[in-house]
Amino acid sequence: MKPVRSQMRFICYITILEQINQPIHLIGHGISGVIGLLYARLYPKKVRSLTLLAVAEQPAMTWQTHYYVQRHLMSCSRQQVLAFMVRSLFGSDTPYPAKDLVRALDRDLAKAPCLHSLFRVADLPKGGILSPLMVCGSQTDSVVHPPALLEWKTG
Image (cartoon, rainbow, N blue to C red; front, side, top):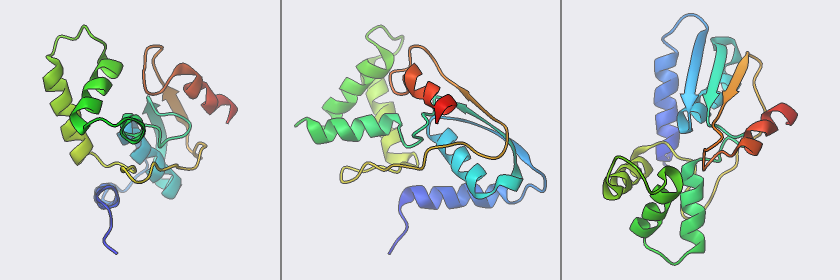
């Protein structure tokens, strides 16, 4: 069975990080934070600390998760759901044209390492790591709401 795109990218990241001979500080936002978290879980002795920005305690919860759930629930085209996502993520008053943001999300959906598909929304194990961990978020994040960030404290 051929590895999926996200597995191949994760393998590439690991290959690059393996060349570093000392524990490292990792910082990741969104899906990059999820990759950092997975790396820290697999290689705890190689990670000195991890900082996550906008990563829920259920780390598979990304904007792509919301996209695939919306595609499953609504009988809309990819572009229509992405336009909805632009309004949800960025609001109606952005300095960029909505169609440019739709194109950016479309590119991200096509190229970013993602665990989800139209057929399956993935879950990852909850919980932290052995190294020091700092989790940051925003009161106005439309993907990782503040209560989801608080779950890191109780989880």
